[in-house]
Image (cartoon, rainbow, N blue to C red; front, side):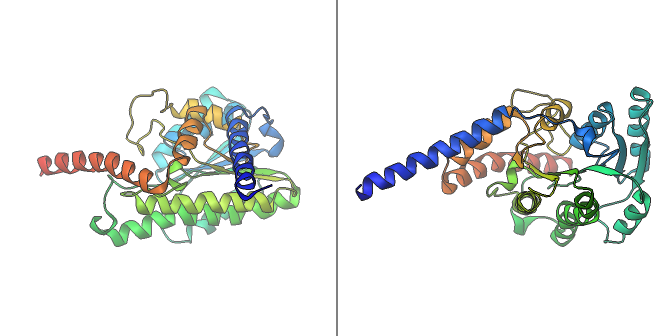
Length: 302
């Protein structure tokens, strides 16, 4: 077989493997009974968006819920909503700010001591106020510190806290919420993209480590979802509500990597086919427009 024929054969195998992986993630027939993992589920960043939807859906499916977020009043509101719909479910709230130093994890550890934690959803996160060049971000030192603590440290510390007990019991599920922005470069959201890239690779690395040890670890990389973080107010084909997204994502917990939603799988696959230089130019064009509008609105308000 000549060089060109060999190269062509490898190319065909590569394309076939990419397509097979894509369709498996898209269709994913394996659905698991999540109650088998344990009695309690922890959800960080659980008062809005995807985190809130996870807490409500997991409670609906029979798990007791530990809500962890910054604002006590919002936590109590979500807890009340869960109890009104699921009277047999226990809800515990822990008010901590994930942008603070690592002492918060001592508080969390004490609050959950002795509980059978079956599921951990590391959802808490933050982004830019609007897309911006990294060297132009206002109060950039504070942003760097807060975003790394919130997006990176929270995932590492919470996983380090919960994983050993899961491995000892040989059962458990950890869902680390990354983003499609962590899958490839995102100019004008460079720090956010970098932190979410850590979450994605960290999660998939641990998934491989734990594959034969009874614990599932998932890198969840959603596209746009209706939420305060995304700034999207109305749902559409490619921007589901948090509730729609979470119902779909929970049915895909058997996958070590997924976007969680069929339309996001199509988006991610399509963008993965673009070379970086073209993807970067398109991103700069789109986010540059968002940046220009945000700056114009800001200047009007001054």
